Image: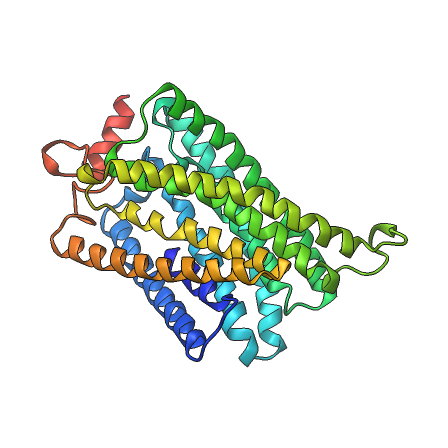
Length: 368
């Protein structure tokens, strides 16, 4: 997710220089390599350990991260739009339309069945609530920006349904996120803040407001190209002008909420950094903030503000540096067997530093 989001961010920079597009393509290619490699590895894990797929989808923490697989696919589609359509014919535009609707259907199945599994098999205390609980709905939070991005190459007859669908899907994702925000706030008020090793995951709360803000501003900006003059039978001022006028204030309204979550998470991480150890949740330093920066880029473009554009350029530089640092830390941790190793990730609570086998876990469930 983080690498795909970075390539999207680089492609939308307000101030460009020679080689920027190439750097973005490098991130995109790396994203494809990582996605295929990780998919093959996790498929091997499930194939070599029969029953482990079901255990993964039922795990009280690991199960929520199934949604990140689909978010990664969304950013691959988005990057194909950004880096592929300038060099390909209309066939790719049509393919992207099909991919958008196919992806939306898969995301709907994921959010229905994933939450059903969680609700049916687990009782999670509110005192443990984390922003990661909304990850199964995250694919819908990126469908809005994805739809707005695709509209730049789509003809009006296919662009309008994508625009309406993107808004509908984004609204659904935001609604679920809003409910999860309630649980998260309840936990923060009534219980302790997350432990030091969990605090990078607090940044996940930035994403819903950031990507919804991005959607409002982007859809408002592209509306004059997509909406027909007589859309909804509006006379006088066109509906496209209304959408554009409303989209920007709505996006600005939500952007500050995302920044507030960013500030809250940052203070918590700074105060607890001495007790923190590296986990894969450190990638939360990148992905949600990339969405916040993309939304700020959209706002700066809509307002034609060089000041905002300059701030987003600085934010992008910081994110690139953060990506490099987290990538280096990940490779070092893997080499030292500190992550992606039995007993050190989500399964670390198992006794004697080992994971419970699939057969043992299934037997335990039957006894329960």
